[in-house]
Image (cartoon, rainbow, N blue to C red; front, top):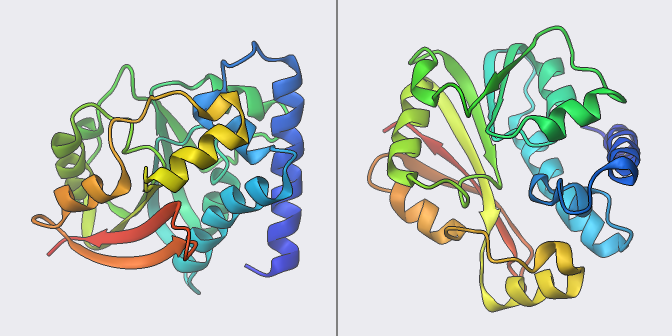
Length: 227
């Protein structure tokens, strides 16, 4: 994606999130990263959006995907882009209020199907059917990580890939959360990205995409493929 296109995408979604936040109950949308994607501090805002830019650049290709799953879609910040590069997109989350709130400003494309993960399981989706699954800053929250990872990998076609991003949870990251504001200081993560990677190594082939940013690694992004 060209820088001008990405900046337009970012501005449109950030403005929608700010409008939703202005009307929402305080703290209700924090876990869906609304404060991060709309943060007034330019460095914090840039860092969170840069994670998405790295993923977009990695998954971009000349031919469209057939099926993509956005696991833990949150506000749906990736969905407008995913709907442009895939014939069908499935968005899944246990809390759909963030996505529903943004839809008032950015309606979903017709090729996006929404699944309520509080009522259906990942294992209910058809196996070997997705070209791409993205799980961005969500696996650090799930309770049963081994089961979730095995279920997600089972959904992939043999040539498919699972894109994972997450916080390092190191001391610098924890300090950064406190500096960013009270919305980020709660201890709600089950684990960091290193533990997620350790769980995946025996069952998938891991390739790095990006670490944001040396010498202060706060987030890591990698891809996992079936062996």
